[in-house]
Structure formats: C-alpha cells, structure tokens
Length: 498
Ligand SMILES: *Cc1c(COP(=O)(O)O)cnc(C)c1O
Image 1: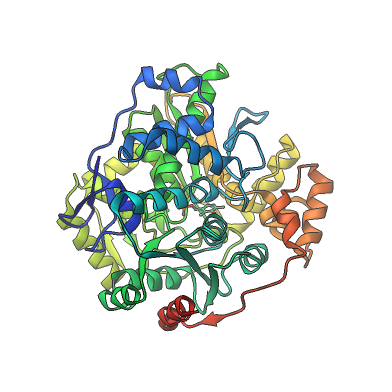
Image 2: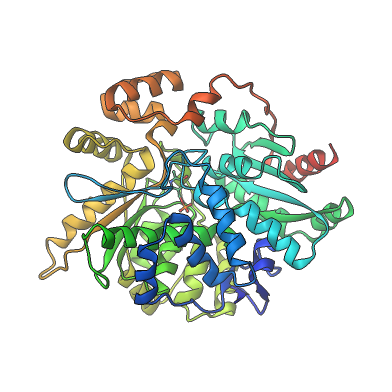
C-alpha cells in the first residue's frame, strides 16, 4: 500500500508516511486507495477481541508491518488500559450508544492511537533503516500532549516534546502534562492559543533550515499530531469494532447503517469514521459536533471555510480550534483527489484565512455529514439532563456531541420517511478529566480544586475514578517553561542539546 500527498506528487510507503509525519510539500499523506473490508471479513471480526480487530484494520494499510508483531504491539498497548475492552460500546437507556474511548492511560481517546504510535514509528524506522534518533513534536489543545508523552516516555532513541497554549487547556490537562515522568520528555507552554501552537509546530516541520539544524545533531523530526497517518489508522479500527459490537448484541444486522456523532476539533476522529465508511463500513450520517468555535459547522453548511473569526475559550478545550488540519484530507477526496486544487486552497487558507468549495463538493459533504454546534449553556444543560434522566455522566466534549446528535435526531422529525438508524455517540474523554466543569454541569457548584471536583463527581455518580488521575495529585510539577510562538524552535534546540 502506498500513500500520496494531498498537495502533490509525493508517493511513499506506510512506514515512510508514519516516520515522516507530513509530506515534503506540506501536504498530508493519504492512502492511495481505500482498502475494502467485505461482509465476510466483518463476520470474521465478530469473533475477534479488540486488538485483533485493530490489527486486522491496520494490516489493510500497513502491509510492510509483520502481522503477528503488529497484533502483539496492539495487545501490549491496550493492556495499559483500565478496562479489558479498550473501546466498549455502552447502551444508554434511551437507546443511544456510547462508544467509550477514554479508558486509556490519559483518559481521552488520543490514547487509542498514541499508545500504538511508538511501535508504528520504531518499526517504521527499522523497515526504512533509519539510524537517526527521532524527535516527536506535538502541538496540543490538552489531550494529545499528555497522550504523546505517556506513549513515548522512556522509549529508546526518541525524544518527545509538546507545546500547549498557556491559558488554553484545563487545569487537569496542565497538571497531567507537567507531572509527566521520563527522561526523554519536555513540555512547554506557548503564549497564544492552540492555533498558534499548531502553526508553530507546522512551521518547524516546513523549515529546511530547522531540519538541517536537527539533522546535524542526529535527529529526525516526526509528528504525534493527527496529521500523522499513524495517528489516524488506529482510530479507524474502533468504528469497525463498534459496528461489530452492534451486530454481536443483536442490535443490527450486517448492512444496516449506523450514525456516529463525533465531538470535533482537528477533524481527525471524524475523518477516521469517514475512512471507515470509504472502506465499506455501512455508515449513515457522521454528525460533526463543534462548540462555539463553529468554523466546521459553517463550512459544512455553507461551503466556505473561514478561519478569520473570534476565538473562544470553552470548557471543551480540545475542540477550541479554528484551523482543523485533517479537513485537508477530506477536501482532497471531495475534489476528486485534485492535489493542485487542494494545494491552492491550503495556500488561500494560510494567506487569506479562507477558501471555498464548489456546490458539488458541498453536496458531497451534506451527503455524508450533518454539522452543528452548541453554546456553553446548552452543553451544561445536556450533561445535566442526560445524567438526571439516564444516570450517565458525560465529559464536556461528549456533551457537545450528544447535544448536536439530539438536534440532528430532532431535525429528522421533519423529514418524511426518515430512516431510523442507531446513533453512536463517540465519548472522547472521562468526565473526571474535566472535573470542575462537569461538576458544575451536574450540580451548579463551582470548586477550585480539581481533586475536590473528582471526589464530588464520584460521590454523585459512583463512576470509578481512573487510577492515573488519582496518582498525579502527589506528583511534582516538573515543567514550567513558557515561550513566545516565535521562540518555539529555540526551545526545541535547548531540549535536544540537554
Ligand atoms: C482531541 C479531542 C477531540 C477532538 O478530536 P479531533 O480528532 O481533533 O477532531 C474531542 N474530544 C476530546 C476529549 C479530545 O481530546
């Protein structure tokens, strides 16, 4: 299987796509074709456990990787989760399904891929005969950073560094990152928002001069962000797994379509669902849910991507994003894989902050996606109502997805003969990861201390507190550096010269 750049002619193998992270022309690597998964194969997947299902899906893309070894790596990765099934599908009383992706070491769905990426990267280097050490960089809106740090900490031949917006992550997210252990990790706050962090990291990737400076010191750059196909691939697997679970529990039969609602920021998670659909999974609508930073809602309804707008800090910080990187992969598909056009649009986005798609492309978007957003008050209300009615506590990101899913289902009431399909809401974080905001939503009470919040939510919901969050309370704060966006590369050099 080969991968091509969304912006040009570059064509590489899976190992190269993962090790490089981003194409030389600034584009993102996408599979040359979508491998098909047949009905017979889905039937075979019914009898598999989660790591086997994931190995099957990943194997379709990464044929250079040894299958047995890949399975062993996935087993080891998911053995670090606190539940035996890393992606359980939970049926709530009203018939909604929650795909819980937050049982990993950092309590957010990023763990589904970032516990696996170190293996994919190391093995990729072996396959390619890369001798350099690897410097993994990540820009984070809160969750990627910690998951990358946990995934890569103390990995041989790798250093990992994350940049987060100084004021743009939750207290708990900051605490998680700044208490990370391991001798090969670094965490730096950036004066700015997530887009500043992401642009800064992309600038480092795009600079021949910076890359040369790193090469002179024996380092090769790679990315832990969802621009890296190695992040995307493990995310495709859980959509297949959820579908299998619905068949196994007699909720659907093969061929029935299922809708997925995804709380969206960088468009990585929902893009994985779209890829699953392109591989043949019977997917109905993909509900693209945003918070007040509703640039994707506007794009999916009007066909203009306009990032020049006020940026809001919300209680779903991992979705506070105005430039969604992975959308580039979708518009590449919508344009009929027109790399020149994709490159033009991305140039327009960088220079003018906006671009348009055609009416035909917009129709294609509407066919696959329903997009909506929620205000902060609506999210709070939704979390409260859902817990009061069904006893199921959601985090603030999942609350956004649930609210938009409900709006979507409501909108179907006006559609004659609308097909009734199961709705799977992708639950991306543990409520304990955002304890102050979740407690506020559940009770109206404000607490200053995150751990007090955790305790109160536990008393109220009786939901088990993740061990990893309990543990950080007593860990020392190791990282306190703050830098300007323009100084990010200086921090990188300082770190690798240590
Ligand atoms: C990263 C994240 C999101 C957004 O996912 P994307 O792949 O960036 O769209 C949503 N919820 C949580 C909890 C996250 O950590």
